[in-house]
Image (tube, rainbow, N blue to C red; front, side, top):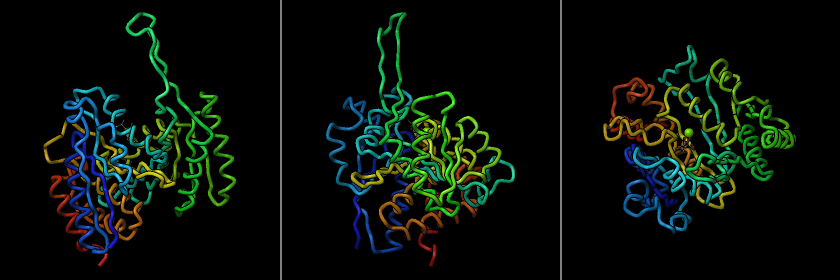
Length: 357
Ligand code: IPM
Ligand code: MG
């Protein structure tokens, strides 16, 4: 019996709703396969915790997470606390503290889901976005001076290191190499940003030499938005900076049908630290407690987590189950369906029990 220890941090907004749905589905997966199991460490960190204790997680938070095999994260952010406080209090310290430098964001049009792009189905939009996750525009480098005075100034410095860029390029080329299309688009903005982005381009070219079977091209980030809309089938694997990929992945999720299905892995490819898996939709305060949060992103995320843990068969079975349920039209309102979180969850659990027999 293989045993995995998972830290669950549902945190804010619809996070608790979709993470409890995800844990239910993972339980069904364990029962279905019978040769591995999970121990879940539950953490109540997040904005409520912050209101009680003045911090989003305790000072020894990272030390508590360190021994787990993976982290299953919901969403952080609340209407009454500034977003930079919540983000820099919980999610980024975990991503950066555990050097989860590769943020992996697969995007596909799932069967039964309608893309807002006319005539675009599952075969036309199947992307893997790799987001640099440790530096760039999210390096946290900057500050404010002359606070509150007329001459106030603020800097927000994007950091690009040779080590940081090279490791994400290697990860991206290797990810592209593992896919059927073996194609990578390197997103850049080196026309306007002459230093960091030119280094980014140079290192992409250097690293490409080690992956001769991967075809690759370069696209400016603004032009990339057009290409994603106009010729989605020309795209396979994408690598972009922390901020560029943040923006492009929201667009990608919308083009694939809904932000409610988009998963992500914050991965330490070197496995020195636990990696963290989360839906990318965020807290979604507008639908909290209404029972209609789309759990598909958290299921897809759970499937990525299973893959990361080495349970490829279970990961596949879970995705097949999710696809069967979507294809059957059992979907939440963000996808045009009428089902609740609970109904989708039950349907996926049932499909897991029957999938791939
Ligand atoms: C994402 C999210 C986060 C980000 C937010 C919650 C800060 O938008 O994972 O894409 O910008 O990284
Ligand atoms: Mg985002």
